[in-house]
Each structure stands twice: as C-alpha cells, then as structure tokens.
Image 1: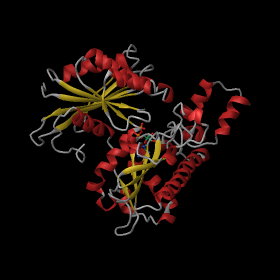
Image 2: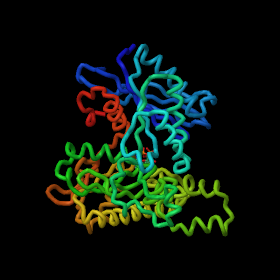
Image 3: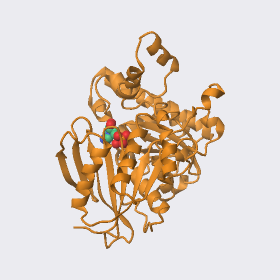
Image 4: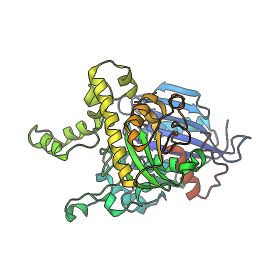
Length: 408
Ligand code: ADP
C-alpha cells in the first residue's frame, strides 16, 4: 500500500501505452518526486501484454491481457485498475502526456483545455499515425478522472525557435499556408539532453552540439547554447536518418513513381514509408540493430553501412549549419548501447576532429572522446518521461523537489 500523491506520465501510441508513475516524497532519501513505476501495455490490437517495473528497474508484472484491450481507451481502463490496486488510495495530482504535434504555435507544453484540444485535433492531418492516439488518451483520462489537470508536452515545441529559413519547405505559398513546413520531432528527448548538459558535459554546455537520437526512430538535433537551431526531421518523422522501418530522406520523385508507375495506393505508400523501409527494407531481415549487427548476411551489412553512412552525412550537414561543432552526443536505444555503431559514426566524422577513446566507448561513456581534445563525443541517456514529468510539475505549480535526472 502506497498513498502518496502521484503524477502520471502517459505516452500513447498506435500499438502501445507507455506510462510512468512519480510519487511525492516516496523515499526518505529524496524530498521530491520519485519514479515508483514504469511500464507499458504493448501489442494493442494484436496480442496485448502488460509489463511494469518498479523505480529500481525490477520487473514487477509481465502478463498477457485479454484481446479486448485494443486501443488507448481500453488500455487506460486496464492501467487504471492496475494503478488502483498498486497505489491504493493515492491521489492523482496531474497527468502529463506526450503529444507528437504542437504545430507552429505551441512552442511550449500547455495545460489541456477544450480550446487546446480543438487546436490539437486540427493538427491530426499533420500526424495521422500518432496524434489521434495521443488525444484519445487525453480524452479517456478526462472522462475517468474529471477535474484532474492534464498537461500536453509536444515533440515539436523544442524546435520552435529556428530561423525561418531552417523550417522552410520551398513549395508554393498556398500549400505552405496549410501548414507545410519543417517541424522537427524528438523534441522532448533533445530538451532533456540540453537540460542536463551543464551537469554531465559542462565544457560543451554553451557550445555547438549535435545530438544523435538513434532509436527505432532516429534523428539529429543541432544545438547552439542548448537551443535547437535545426533538426534532421522535417514535416513528418520520415525525413533525415535511416530508421528501423522508415527510409529517412529520399528523393520525393520516388514517391511519385510509387503512385504513378507502380500504382500503389496512399495506404500502400504509407505502409512502405513507415513500416517496410529503413533497416528492415534494406536487410529484409529485421528493423532491430542488434539482430543486424549479429547477422553475417550481406543485406544486413548493407543496412548497417547505410545507417552509418546516412548518419555521418547528416552530421556533416548540421555541422555546416552550426559552423563547426564542439560536441557530439549519442542517445536512445542504439546511441546509448551500441559501441560499434558509435565507433563507426565517429570514424566517419573524424574530419570534424572527433577522436574516439575506444575504452571509454566500450564502457558507454559518458565521455567517449580522448580527454582534452575538441570536439568531444559523449553518451548521455535520454529520459523523455522525466522531461514530461518536469513540465507537468512546473505547469501545475507542484514543487519539483530535488532534480532526479541523474537517478532515473
Ligand atoms: P524507441 O523508443 O524509438 O522504440 P529505443 O530508443 O528504445 O527506440 O531504441 C530501440 C532500438 O535500439 C532497438 O530497435 C534496437 O535496434 C536498438 N538497440 C538497443 N540496444 C542495442 C544494442 N545493445 N546494440 C545495438 N542496438 C541496440
């Protein structure tokens, strides 16, 4: 039994609902918030499964769920039951949500109101695969916990300070007026990294830094003095780097060819671009970098080669935007865990002056470049959920207590 007030963080996607629970004053060690549970309901619509860990990362639940758990609403019902049992009597002080699109105007997280929801629904056409699920979770919480304040945190907000030229997509004005511009995504991850640079890598805190968020989605962000000045993601999260099942930047003429010559429908093209390309499309084996690195197949090698090639090429582009770099930071699943990929990207970026310390790299950093040499290279774990929690504490005027960044 645990009756401390809690704040929930929810990240609702098409096939999963991820959650974190932060409790106030849960431990004698901290006078602030502490992560007490995190987990996900995955396989929504196929084979739903509930997985939860406690604040130390120990798995506390892992079981199959009934097939009736198939969308954000039914997943939230199931999560609510679990929360009630696990945190009996706990008051929910607020719920923070990851919302993929805040459009051009939401440059910061915001407390959800009917007007905010109306604005965010208007952005569904700009992120049809993600935004509806994010908003469905907000609606579902509003129905089940009326009166509990909710905070929407956007993947786009961190990129809203760009120069107009960086966000321009040079199409005719009447098309741009409908919202066609570069937005950039993974903003909560980059904002978190920017927030802890002074702690973890103070020598580059105010400098020109490229952050490489390399997970199943992958992108780069160019930071100057911890502010985003450009990103490899554009109008959608299809641009830029090669990803698990997305191609990254391709000639838009290919998309015309798919429609006009191969006769694919819009649904087919969407599936090709979001689900069948990238590492999976090139290798024909897997979208998982771990599988490809272990494989001896030529196609797996080509997929990894392209991933590295494209990452190095895009790093070069952002280095040009920044006029040189002071630091390169790796984060997310591949960036935090694969010394081999980091080594190859750093080797391809040697012309920028990056010199890897192989021992430090094998130990996952944090600093993985030779001491005293600039630019430096780093591995820093991201924590998008904590970023959402921080925004929620701040917007709801809840005391945030000690910063938990380096503990969670
Ligand atoms: P997302 O949150 O976008 O689903 P993650 O940031 O969790 O993605 O990254 C997931 C990816 O990280 C996996 O698909 C896998 O390819 C990669 N990954 C995780 N651990 C390793 C590792 N040790 N070596 C190489 N790749 C890894």
